[in-house]
Each structure stands twice: as C-alpha cells, then as structure tokens.
Length: 123
Image 1 (cartoon, rainbow, N blue to C red):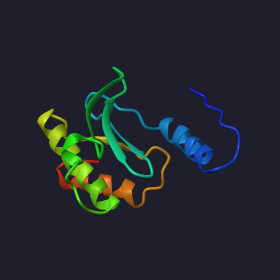
Image 2 (image 1 turned 180 degrees about the horizontal axis):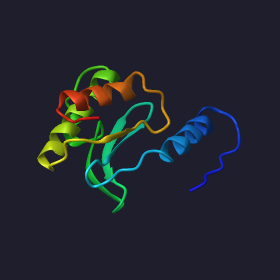
Image 3 (image 1 turned 90 degrees about the horizontal axis):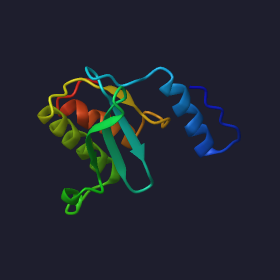
Image 4 (image 1 turned 90 degrees about the vertical axis):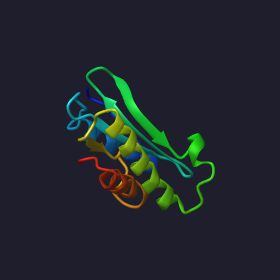
C-alpha cells in the first residue's frame, strides 16, 4: 500500500508519519492494534483487528460516562487508556500493538498508553 502525501504543514506531516508507521504495524487476532486519535478537545482509542477489519473495543472522552469527569485533558487521556484496558480485558485481549497515529509519543498520546499499561494491557 503505497501512499504518496505531498505538501507541507502539520497535518500533512502527521499523515506522512502515520503512513510510514502503518507499513510496519498491523493488528492480528492474537495482538490487535491500539489506535489513538487525538483532536484538540478529545481522545479516541480503539482496538482493531486488521485481518477482519473490525473494531473490537473502543473508548473516548466523548462517551456518556465521561460527562462528569473533571480534570485536565492529559488526565482524561489517561482515564481513556484505563477504561479501554478494562474493556479489553473483559473481551479477552491482553496484548496490543500501539499505533500513535503519526502523533509524537508525548503528552496525551503517551498518557493513553500509560493508562492502558496500568489497566493491565501489554503494549
């Protein structure tokens, strides 16, 4: 899958990094892919089996149970990781491959990974 992304700017650079990352990382039934999507306000995390093309588990700050959460965006990202790990454990998933989506492994993206590790997922 050759993706050619031409241009400059933050979004183009992130897409280029993500395409380069996806050449190496795929989710299998034994070790699915944990995908992190970061927006200015929210964090979305999904566990995906790429062989079937299905999302097995997902969690985000947009979920109903996040309405009463008070804290910083980084704290919310960590909570997303913890809740995702809990749902994954219930679904029988113990190990995942981390897909940072072309974002730097820093701040909220790293907080999701840390929360997932604390919840018991092996990254």
